[in-house]
Length: 266
Image (cartoon, rainbow, N blue to C red):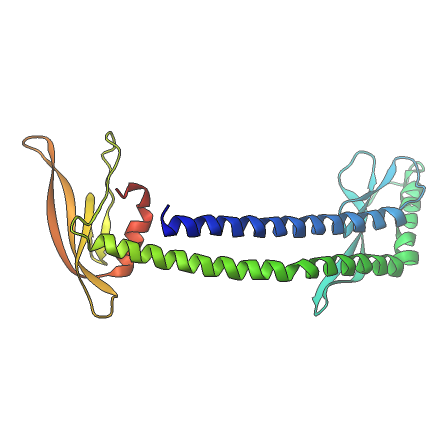
């Protein structure tokens, strides 16, 4: 097992630990929302005229509906804002849908009776509801704060490990690039595709079968390359190869090419 493979195994383990913490944070968020929904269900629980119902749609929104309709005729929305202490629910707003109808029957009276009871809950208990919602929000925020430092340390370890892997892979790639055989680009036997390499902004070479570096600049930012190219000999219908020399090719272009075609590297 190579050093890069060992480092990648360690990196996978670090990611698994981080995903475990992320799952815990996600579950805390879900429990937070569920607890707040239960608070809303507790308060918005009253007898209504026949065919009217209250639906707690989320931890911040309650609807008054009629019949089987999915649309509300009134709703209460609890607004939050971000503060130094985290999310804080600061106010509730009531929205009433307007309507116009012929005065006939008793359904209009029932409608206003349902709306009146719905609105009275928000008016009478609005402050209590907001206080309970904020209490739950604060409690679950503390739970997250307790495990957040561990996640932060794992993130630092992951970043450091990733940097070590990238550095080592770059060194290995540079060694292979300057090797006598260079780096070969190989496709499946029935695949006629070979990638294109952008040597300069105005120079691209198609059907690249390999790269070999012959010289590196003093700064290390560019290299002189021998680019192996595959082409079809139309007289014999066979594949043949030639070598194209390119000077002062930016090394980041080489890295990008090799990264994009990693699965073809032999």
